[in-house]
Length: 118
Image 1 (cartoon, rainbow, N blue to C red):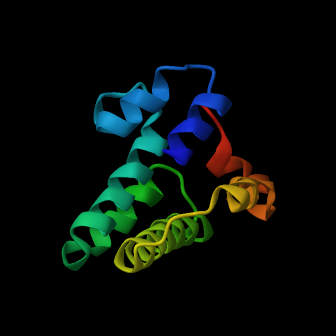
Image 2 (tube, rainbow, N blue to C red):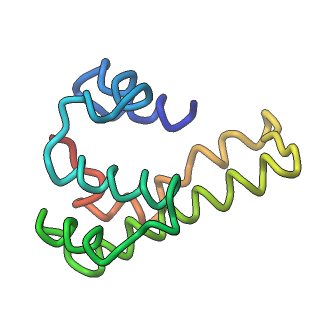
């Protein structure tokens, strides 16, 4: 839920987080962001079905190879960390939550193309 809270906080549209969490395909998103989410979703749910066409679709939506790599790395990192935490039954202690919440103060926040809103 932390990601949904971040989206609600950062978005001009308070309903956006709910739409994205329930079914991003029905949310009012720009085509580039929708393409990134399609790619990340497929990489998460069907990694063995990824094809060159999936990368080409991102290029057709204006993403550079560096940006495509960032999308893939972010999706893979979240998948890895979630599976690791779930597999070990990890819960973030309340006193550490503030640390977790600061990850967007890192250089990732400077990637304007990734953080922009519609």
